[in-house]
Length: 70
Ligand code: SF4
Ligand code: SF4
Image 1 (cartoon, helix red, strand yellow):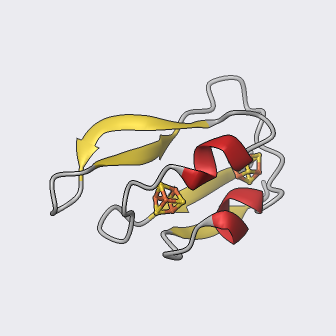
Image 2 (tube, rainbow, N blue to C red):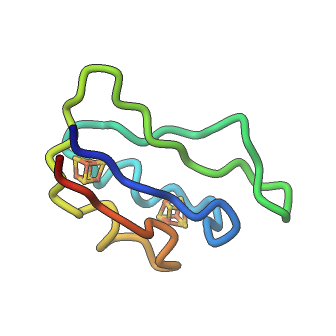
């Protein structure tokens, strides 16, 4: 099962990654970073992640810290 990891405190809530994901697996979370901004979360109940890393490449803050193939 492919997945990504997101560093909550690095995420600046710009949401650029949301549109980048071809499978639309990133969404605004109810969780917040230390600035009070709603971070993004990875939501892939049907295991659709391609491990393509497009989300990580788009993130200007390197908040997507890992893309794993499994
Ligand atoms: S692109 Fe990076 S900083 Fe922006 S919302 Fe996504 S993970 Fe957070
Ligand atoms: S690795 Fe690709 S498919 Fe997986 S969440 Fe990121 S952009 Fe979406």
